[in-house]
Length: 213
Image: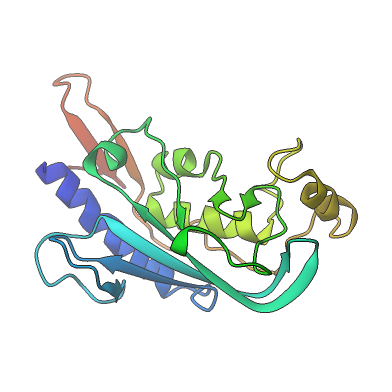
């Protein structure tokens, strides 16, 4: 593993901690697995016990309301997704990444009625691409939450995975999100993360704010 990759994991972990302490902490809980074969999920606010920062994350989304399957409203909905970022994913500005639904699928009666979601799949679209353009993993976590909450900026025309859900969002919800959540897209005083190649040396670099690593 490169020193640059390890530096970025450390910064990303700090940003995830900042997200966990933001005003949306009531809607999500972030966990991680320590590197080295440990299967235990630890709260992101707990720092790793070794100098190696985590590559695997779990996010439990908790929403006051969620429309499920046929548009039925469920209260106090929650479910978890996991994702992992190896060096090839995190350090490549053109990489792609998705999430895995905990236990492989949403249980019956808990499937979000959403044009980006099926029982066993969440289409994350360009969420990771946006995260890689200077924000980081915390932005990806927010975008997945926006997808589940049907926030307007994440929704798009077209059939996608569920035409009925898209029509429901347009005609019944009038293109409004399910829950009124003020996502912290730009965490206060956050460092901007950008991954690229320095033209002079052709060495990878990370730009955090105005500091190059």
